[in-house]
Image 1 (tube, rainbow, N blue to C red):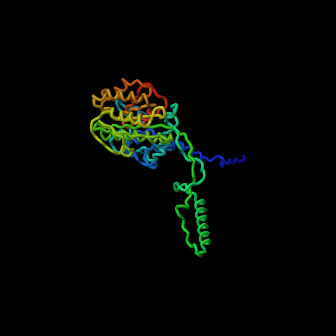
Image 2: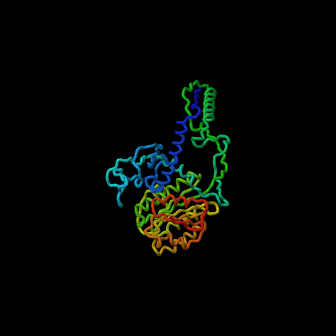
Image 3: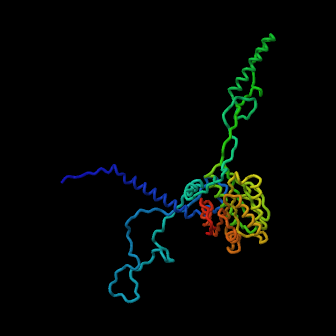
Length: 394
């Protein structure tokens, strides 16, 4: 009988096994990210952090299938024939499951992996269908940008300094000085001949028109007394994640930041995400300031306008009608308006209920986030491409 030798060098079993392990690990990471996304995105610690900020995510361990010694599960056993009604057979103790006693069985392996904010965005950007910010007839504005170099001039900025031309100008001045000395019959050695301002030459640049996309996002946040610490954390996280995604997807986007109590004011980005205030609530104050900005800086015929408003829905009743009127006016001039109601104390008496009932606009989107874990679903809904007629409550 002849022996047969098989060459296994062309079937690298260990290599294939490692590929499968990496695939399974990647699936576990993605699953864990989705399960923990709401908690991660609702942390105020993400605000203002760099793209390399790391977050820890728990992941269940991967185990290979193997045979182990053990006892039969409960309910599977063989009797001796001498059992009586009510007797238990095949029971075991000390396995650590369903018992207050210390067990001797292994637990489930759970370990933590770290992921940066940038990597987190990469994982979940595929789940988003971001809105088209260029739907207007005038979806581009014309600005001036650098064009071709057109000759030289004696004034300009340092980055446009023409070094070769400057040296040539200095040499020409030096030669002229030598000729002047010779004509005057003077023998003078020009040992040191420094540059002067009159020697400097700069490239002349002809500006040319350049088309750029034009869209403005207006972030309006209620910072009144009813917005406690947890609600303000949630609102800031909502706006921070929105701005991160929009900036990753689009260029040349303008941002405006408005905070309000009974009165509204325009603030910079740092104040918007870090400064706390208190007082009463007039929702209309923030919305009307947005309308004023649009009137002064962002003509609707030329700009795509996207205001987003976040609040807990509490408002002074005397301001409710003014708030409804302001929302309707914004819908008239904006591509889309988003309203996010965060951690409301009650549902039936908040402004979400009034907006849902009385604002019948296709470009008005409203969402209720009742728990931290629902924040991501609310953001996904706000960034959905298809505008839906009905409001959406989580």
